Length: 68
Ligand SMILES: [Zn+2]
Image (cartoon, rainbow, N blue to C red):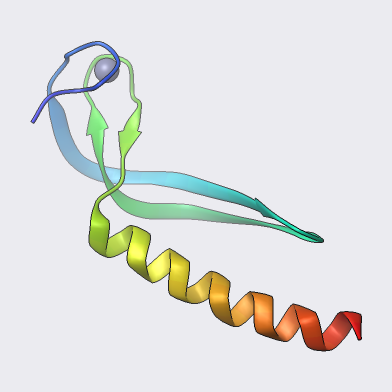
């Protein structure tokens, strides 16, 4: 696998992931990802992205309860 930005080599690592949703913002400090050795850009994989989506679904539900 190579970096989509600079074509550098990717290695297994961790990277922060932040999301802005309606009414709140979430930042994970260290999500498992492929990280470019050259430019340090992270590439997140499907399984991690799926888990983030699931976490956000719960947050959305609970946030809806808070806002009502
Ligand atoms: Zn790169």
